[in-house]
Image (cartoon, rainbow, N blue to C red; front, side, top):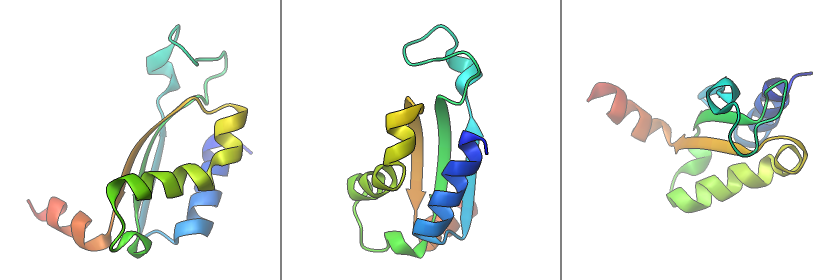
Length: 95
């Protein structure tokens, strides 16, 4: 199972997202801190879930980091996170 697949499984289980996007951006960080041969070190993640309703932006990121604690300890060096409620996502999509 790839790291992206592990991330997807854990985030689906933890947040039951309406929308989940995961992109491995490791190739953009080649030679930078945390990059490892084979990639799977830098990810861009968008999670849209009703679980985030009434939760601050910082707490949402902490929730995601907690869900992915094993991956962050093992190989993942960086996560670029977008965490929204469905209402927030709809407003942005309609803008």
